[in-house]
Image (cartoon, rainbow, N blue to C red; front, side):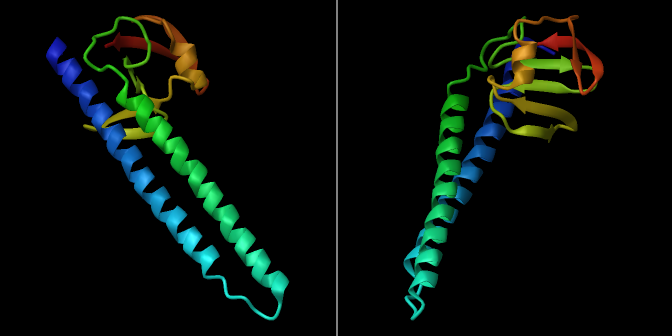
Length: 155
């Protein structure tokens, strides 16, 4: 694979991650709005406690979705700062670490994705596995899911 192909592939991975997170942000915004509407529209009944409980539940739900929204916005911000224009020789943020079975893109915590029929694990730089991979280079080994993995290539 040429240097340009490596950079193009990593840029595609980054764009895929941005789309996934943007979709999560849209869903979370919608959920916040729906929860707020539900809390606001809770009918006052003769049983005042029921009304207050319904409002409180609506606000708790809204707060939960608001936290998810904030986390996704932070994750998108971090991902957008990742530089995919560098071909790395050691594992670090922005690197794609390829092993025989899997590849790990250290950029954002999006889990397992399939891209071009390849299994790619999107790892947050803060994830334990990303920290384990940090500064490793081609031919280094590490343990993943109780299996010894050999790094074939990093870029």
